[in-house]
Structures are given as structure tokens and as C-alpha cells.
Image (cartoon, rainbow over all chains, first blue to last red; front, side, top):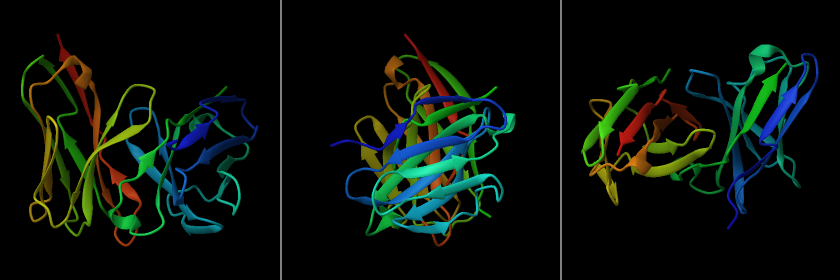
Length: 116
Length: 112
């Protein structure tokens, strides 16, 4: 069974460019979560999605950041006009449809985003 | 707003020692608490999930306890090995959702 797959593993962008991070959840999981880990900081929740719906985006900056989880295909975290402060590790997690509250979240290996 | 604190921030022990990692949280109305392991440059591996109705959970040399009323959890690692070297994170769900609030972690180094 494949776990959560994130790509790319490493992404380098220049300031002002766009970054697209992809996440394929565990097969059968319909809940996807994105977290960001800044240097010397803990993981911080960004956005929680179910298929075609954003459930909670309270941790995501209002500008430049967007996320989607379409009916078909991976979840995408998109960062427009990147700045140096966006440099971080971005992790995706997934959990099953039912009983999401009491199911462990399965994490991918993350995408390390570096902004030049 | 839920806050999670982990003590110590770093721990270095010789191989074979038993050790305890601590996690505290401010809002005791949690559904569960999860312990993770993170290796450098890697993602998170779930170690143990304790439901709010449970007091402890065991997996191999790991034992996690939960005291909701005092807002504390401990992760006990028996007979530590160099392969246990990693950062250990605890996390609790945010109220009403299954999104997680994490502590900053304890970085463990077990030397041969």
C-alpha cells in the first residue's frame, strides 16, 4: 500500500515565481491536511480539505496561498509570488473518510521549498 | 487556543537507558493525542495514538500515557537504541476538527 506521496521532494524558486506542491493521499482517504514547518518552528496547520471542499483554511495566509483537492487527482497547494519567508518544509497528511477525528493522520515525506 | 509544549527540547543519552519525553497541552477537551517520530529530512511516522478514554498505549518498547485532567502525556522509551535517535512530536486535534496542533518536539540522540 502506497502511503501519502508528495512531489516534488525539493523545489527551488526565485522570488516572485509560483510554487505548486502536490499531494496524493493514501488510497481511499478523502481527508487531506497541509502543514508547514518553518526552520526552528514546530509544524503549523494550514488547510484542511475534503474532496472538492475546503473545510478549514484558518491556518493559511489569506494572500498568495491557495489549496484545492479536486474530485480526480492530487491535492495542490499553490503559492503565488513567493517570498523568502515561504522557505519551509510543507507536509501533507491524509486520513480516512469516516471517523476522521479518531484516526491517525498519515504523513508524506514533505516538500522542501527554497526561495532564492 | 490550544498550545502544546514539549520538554525537554533536546535529550542525549547513552544506549540502553530508559527515558521519558513530556508533552503538555492547555485545553484538556481533546479527543486523542498522537505521538510521532520525525527523522531528519523525512516526514512524520505515527508511533502511538491514545484515545481520550484511554490512559495508556503500548507498542514494543514505547509506552505513552495520557492524563487529560492535568493536560499531560508522556512517552516512555525502554532500553533506548541508536536507531531511536530522531525528533519526537506530540499532537492533539483542534476543537471541532481533526486538524492537529503540534509541539515543537524533543530531539533525541542515543549514542552507542
